[in-house]
Length: 425
Image 1 (cartoon, one colour):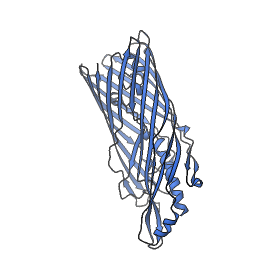
Image 2 (cartoon, rainbow, N blue to C red):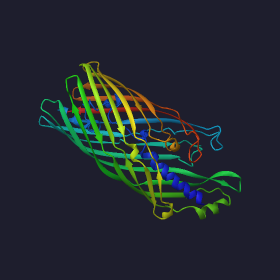
Image 3 (cartoon, rainbow, N blue to C red):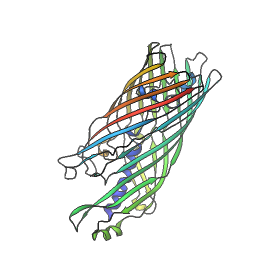
Image 4 (tube, rainbow, N blue to C red):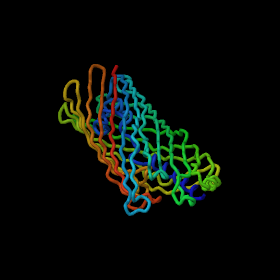
């Protein structure tokens, strides 16, 4: 059954392109204070999450501190089929409800008057798309999962007057991917379409090492300018394709059994993009801080996907992807309401890099607009920050151009809750 083998190849291609290379799978919410300001934090960077946002910001922090928390992400996604499509005219679908929880934790230690060292761990890439049964697009994707974890030791230095600082660190990143999908086939013995096989693709963890760096300049007490850069990475993945037959109870089962490709090892490389950010912050008085950031992500380095099948090399392939670089615009505000309480809010507009031909159940990505609110409580050595983001994705149509013929419109929204607890020694 040559079509089944081609479906396995197509699933693998879609999985890797969707899982690692879309704005929807980048998670810049790696600290609750920063997230309350819509992650417009490059020029502020005044808590230990500066390790992620701008390592130069560590130098201005002169107390040993720990800061840890997580982001709780809930997606809602609906699919409405194209009424003019013979495949999806009556199709509808929704995500199964689940919460995706990337953690973060930071520790910083000042040394002398000018140096600060620190280490952070976070999961800045990853997400899950899990469609609830019954689902018409199960032959493309039922469940996809990308998981990453980074460890980032960092050092920062500032001038004696505190006006200028430099920082940088080494990032060790691990990643793995999963996908589950079914194969459908017309059963000539019943005249109906039937599920005939399930394909589970799972990689082991792969890893790579990169670096991040940043600068922070304070030309006056009211203005701050920051910039940061995180390098791209190439993570080599090895794993297995497990293919299980689904019996129909008809003579079709014998035909499928002879033509299913075997379980086998697979391998590929995920080229994660680089991220650059520039921010300008202004404090009109001692109670208000306003920051505007621009983030640029080099999705365009993902030009093609190469996947190797070990047992059946003829199934190996190289597929063009041709993603575009993207730019996100962020604005955030922090207001010192009292000696103990801060109030925060922000907004973000983020472009997506995905060409319309790639819009599918694996990744129905689109441009998105988000708003955030949050608070911070400071009591003695303790800090408690929390924030919430409401993220609206513009409706995304396949415009009749989906390669599998699964055409329609995706409607996506997300709510992200962030919380961090800190302690300064």
